[in-house]
Image 1 (spheres, rainbow, N blue to C red):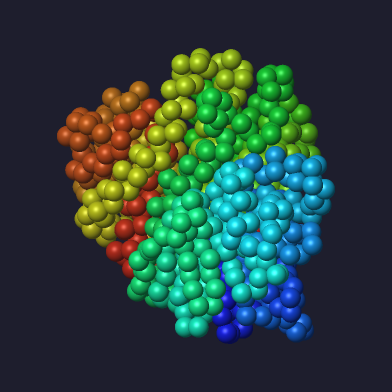
Image 2 (cartoon, rainbow, N blue to C red):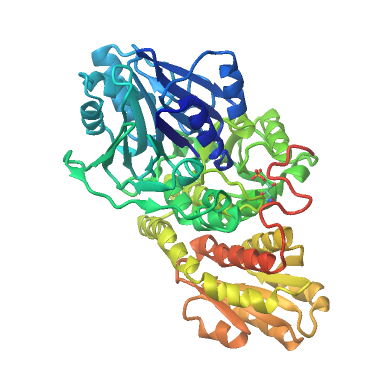
Length: 609
Ligand code: M6R
């Protein structure tokens, strides 16, 4: 996720900004850069790769100043590269900016700036328009130019700007992206996040939406949209650096669980038009192309594979197309029926999982059209695919994948709905109903997160178990696999997931007095059948914890404990159902004293076979 650090004062801007950027490294980034005001100009250094690479680059240079802005970039528009890294500058070098967020009307602005004003563009980013726009309005007053430029922009942004002619000022503005100003002694700061400043400033101003801030060595002034000065109480940070990186949470995993409503909104927001239509980021899948497709293959590993299983239900049910799902390490060594009439979808958070990458290469060798659902922009899977449909979960740091899974589900639903509508297999009413259901998911997940205490209480009762069975039917069977994986990877409990109907074909032999069974019962269509499975295991003495739709008294009656999720359409229930299971796994692992963010034997990105 992008990060911003700004400094103005008597010290070395270079040292302080680089130090601040390092404190944001945990958030993930692919490039970094710094702009320093010195000797009547703004010097910019930026590079793809780690901050250490930026430091190496600057090592031999006699480059420093008393004011500057720095940035870590997590690519969205344009691959990770030196040119796309921030800061961006105006053509004459007068203005330098750093930007977090997305300028939604950047194409329009870019055309206008280059067409009407002959502005040359040097990057593929949306952010570069900001530098040129501010320059266009700059007449010696940076604050005024930023106000005027912002009036032309749509989207989400936190922007820091400097002008070579005013080395004693930094101007910043925010809308739907965090920004803070820190108060130091004989110096002041700007940052996107508290951890960047902790070493230097614990007294800060939290900026609100549509506010602009003017930062000088001795003063920080905040203005509203009408350019009026606003008074803001200072906020005193009491967190330590470690807690601050985790946003006050104990672990990245729980932070990322809580980030799901936002990740889902971001992933949907860019694709769902006000007219209810779905835009596939320019991916061409018109009816004619879809009708040529005989089969869809979804291939992935681990959690991403589980998202693919839910995707299969969605595409088969909503688009009426046959779908095969496979784990990448198996797909590669089979003789899959893949040809030029196959739509091959691979799913990967990191985009670097070797098995997935090799499966993608194999599918392409066989002539398939390859579409990837990936979180990391510019990753290998993204680069080698014909089309990319990004999840916008932001960087996922915990090894146990959570927000990547739910955003992957959103992508699968959007693809399925789009295909179903394009192929005429989904009526307008049903399409609108499911789009509406998707739109409600973030709010419903918030209400599940509000039940964390209840889940924690249940975790206290069961955390000593050494064996757990997850059961479910239909999409719940896939969510059961994900719930089970989450639990085993961070708590080391021997956990096993099975389609509930399969129990009686063997696994039920293992159910005895006090065996823990987690039953997923969110599918109204299959409620009666699942209830029978709960009864089967209860009859053998199992302790049953169920997950059910709000108000399902039958399941509640049959279970020892029930966690409810808000009522929703069966099709989208996996988006909600997984959240209590993530929370349960987290709290069980915590009670067992496990190293939650770095479970033993596991790596975040598996780049070996
Ligand atoms: O980066 P990817 O999505 O390709 O990673 C796939 C799996 O390695 C990953 O989902 C893994 O199973 C996680 N540890 C699950 O929490």
